[in-house]
Length: 622
Image (tube, rainbow, N blue to C red; front, side, top):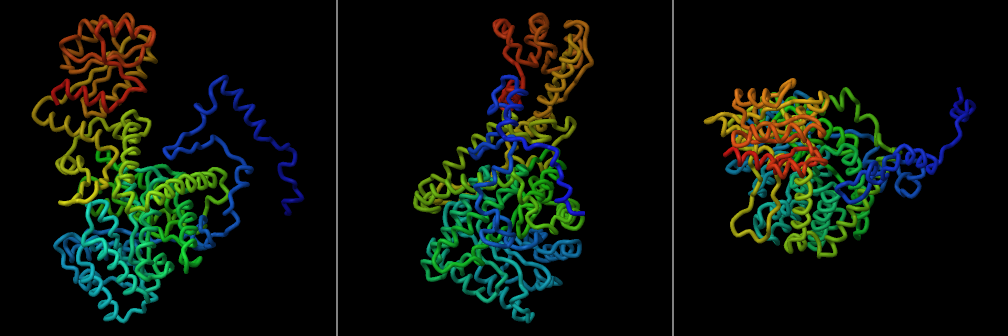
């Protein structure tokens, strides 16, 4: 039946934005629209609570199809991607076996990350029983890359493989080494000369790329989405400039670059990020002489980030990496690596690696995310996010270029300053629970205890600075790091002494005491304390007596604001000097009187949870 003849929804008159706003303002009952409903992002732009078709009018790229310049909608007319898994090569035979097992269970791309001390001519052993024609091969070699490249190309010739059938990459990224170590592996000139040599060596391998751009290094240092894009683009432009100055054509360089970008938990912004990144890179490449539409396609390998991983309640990492993988798949990436849920604190197990593979397999084979190109196309929200992210990322990118380009901005410390400013802001958000880490700074597992592997790895900040570093290095870490350290310290303390006990002295108004005891229990469980909650006491004296019987180290009074004026002074007098006394709430009307009494600990939704738990640990001698 012809839907036009039906005149669907014709009985409903159009509603203007102004009419919607009048209804919203009325429902807000005097509350400020901006404060209540507008989302202020880390990236300085504002996300509105609703968007309409009229918000798409000024977006110039919407008419391009997937696979067409400027590639915001994807670089190909489908949405397929490589299911990739990476393996540390600290034992060649073991790495080969794990890769072969992964391929037989659903992976179609493998990445090999070489450890120090492994001979770089081990290609034949490493690729045993792996078909280069069927499996994309990716290598992060590190030192002595010339030996590896010679061994790899010799192996390909020995196997008589058609070069057109080979897919993969060599992640040669001297700028990543420079910004994380502080000095080039060899000299700056030799590093870029070697990059040129690699491009020439693989000139007749049309599907094999040899230059990497590590956006994930910035992501794991806590940058915002627009900063990650801007800095990655600046690194890409640095390679274009350095290598075209050495005689290569822009199209030769651009078609050899793989962008390795991270993914975090901002579901919709991460989808928009990949669209914005492709749009900006396409326009950058096209601005170079001797470029073309085809070489302006951004090739993206996305990887779930360490920044977003926790060591406590680690199975929550599965949820994080699933939504991250969804963002990347819907954002149209070319390859995707999901880190195993335990990767942040131990050598991953066969189980965790299998789960990481299966997460992608489910997205592709069961959810069919690969069957529809640019599934978010036309979404008023995501299209506007794409535009906002691209504009802000472009502004940051142009600032870096105005400072002389990426290397110059790194050498003057401007890149590091921007990263540290964002780190500080985000860590403050984590400390005050404006940014939630489920299972770590909110709703922790009360009974979980750390083991030796967690203790060894959790404190880690990846400081890879080498001797005689020329610049301040970029140091990736996890955003749960400081909360982890509090809880690890508690666990270590409890191994030789009593685990601190936080006792909920619940009294008075039933609904308020219940709500506040739940809040306080979650609050102190973030530090790994033993929590003793209670249904309620009829008198303060009864509650204090039970608290002392339970050998409480912290007594938390849980009641209503109105009742604190009576209960708090009495409880404080009975507890003082024997345990730490805490009031759960912020009773504005009587708080001055309570402070005058000597009560100093108040916990509530605006508390800096991190600072307060650190202070409680110090008071307890942890």
